[in-house]
Length: 435
Image 1 (cartoon, one colour):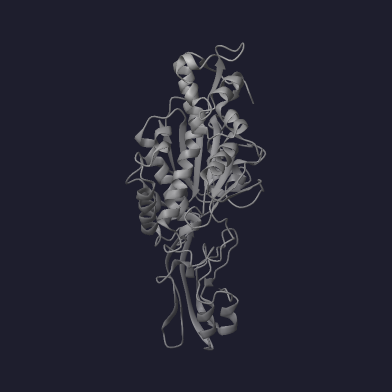
Image 2 (cartoon, one colour):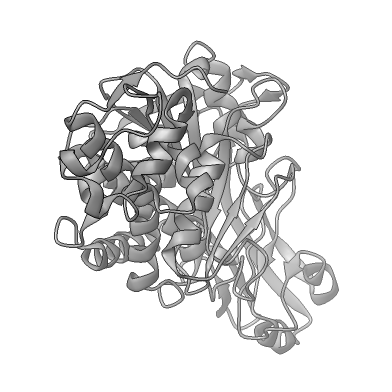
């Protein structure tokens, strides 16, 4: 069971997992990803080397609720040349230089004309910002502000050798079947180009979790979704409405590799089991953390939590999007994410999944008065394992997570206590009737 993975670092070396996640993120870093295109396929095929991932292709023109799958974007080359023929801005040096989904363009522009198509960040003059133009026909380049200030010639040659043709939106899915058909959804967006924390850290930590879950049998079924942000989950939902009722818990992973404390954004309901499980684990971790209420912005929990679905899906991050200076710039590179932080994210998420796996409901088999623990050899552990709390609240209405929250004890202690009480016949697992 996944609970055994959570209990001891001897079972799973989370630092080693963090190092492997960092290595994967570094390998994926150079790939030019976008809403559609070959970069998505290359990313998913890399994941297929270690995970039995299914890759799905959804044709251009497919309707997904209020959205339509757009033309597929491809890039052959993009550059700006000065009058001497030197490439002063070159897509081949950084895929961030080209605004995502730029339409084709070739021509000679004056400096003033060119500047209307350039984006920079004066506050960080050596960083290249990230921009895209998904649903507006346009083109542009992102440059370090210091480079922009060096563009003093009167005319420049511009080449945006791209194509926007009928093709596909690509996403990957992995389903790990458990004993129950109840599902946990774990989602990571895959559409950003060379951005390590915002994109690649979520992908690599999701892959690490899938690897952990493949090692031992589970109670719940786990569904991993690797899809381009916003449109990807909307397309997936439109194609999988029959599956949606099976999703009992879910979490979106993003920005999980920096050194900041964990931040968790609750689901739309604010009190789903996943919300409570994450908060419980963070409270008992001894590390600083932050819990935020749901807002219809940010990552793809807003799609899963849209009112037509209202799924119990939260968002697990470290430093939130937009709250660290490197966000959406070339400084969000492999040096920003740390193996130790990735490993810590994996460890905490495994602990959360262990709570979801073990959150069962029991009935006290000796409910009239307090049963005698001494004659059963349980008295010495009664307080540390919360045995009196478990016996009192095991009325078929309270789950182990309910009891852990009420008692203030760690879930793993309550779970251990429930096992001890079950072994001596004082508890019996029942079907949950609480909300």
